[in-house]
Length: 174
Image (cartoon, rainbow, N blue to C red; front, side):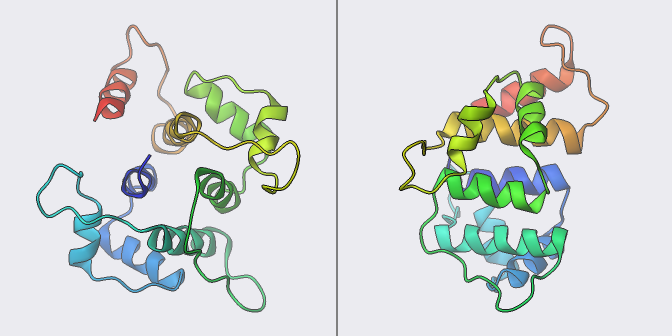
């Protein structure tokens, strides 16, 4: 998954407008123009698409944590220069105040099963013997589960009949 995909999906899940997005970037320590934001939210096939760097996504996620949980005491963390899926997953877990059971429930909503042991391996330090790299597929299903829980909480998930599932499936292909 690209950083731009993550940014677009979070915006959709939380139904944030441009002003709110810019505010969250500034909470995370980055100021960007509304024009740059619009370009980062475009698909990579559009001519004026602007790639969202790891540093900018880290700033946005840090800002999201501050927005949802409040500032922590002391110095605020600086946005990382390099991100991976494990770090994105961890920041989202913190921002939404999710426990392992909550995450497993969201993954289940998105029709993806994962054991608690597999899940905990994503949140370990890289040097830990049970550390596991979070693949794009897992992060994608987690974001889909977040969407089903927060954006459409009353939607029923029946692959054969539900229009919500069909629209989500078509979004996955894009």
